[in-house]
Image (tube, rainbow, N blue to C red; front, side, top):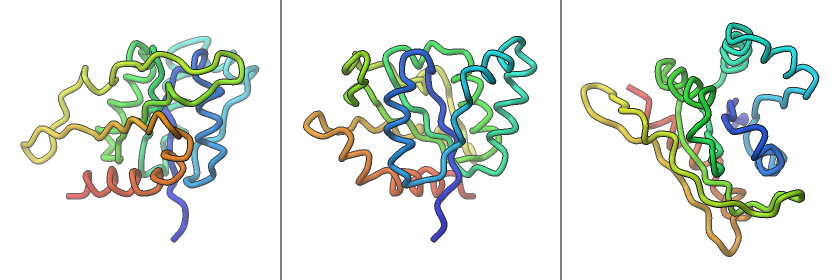
Length: 159
């Protein structure tokens, strides 16, 4: 089976090194990281950011929110979550606080960014899954389960 096309949502400044570890697992095809120079151009106004997000979400089947300490506070993460749900994409969260950042080590577990939403599907409230990888081997746990977690999230959205 071909790898799923994925959009990763995360707090860039705090978590980019942890996110790279997940991307580099190669289990799913994630949106390519944007260069710092390109991001500086994109983020000059809200319309540019929205266009970039919308363009990069096109053709994906799932959005994975990689949850660090402050991810739930990020307005663009909230935009990405809302858009993913409205577009019928699979949606899941993974706590990445236990992945070791070479610059900052591990971090404090953040709140689920899904807590600020009420998701409804066919009249029923649905809560996207949020995974908290094992303390003993967070990287291995994500690596072993990511593809299954994605398929479960996608199946949850099918009519």
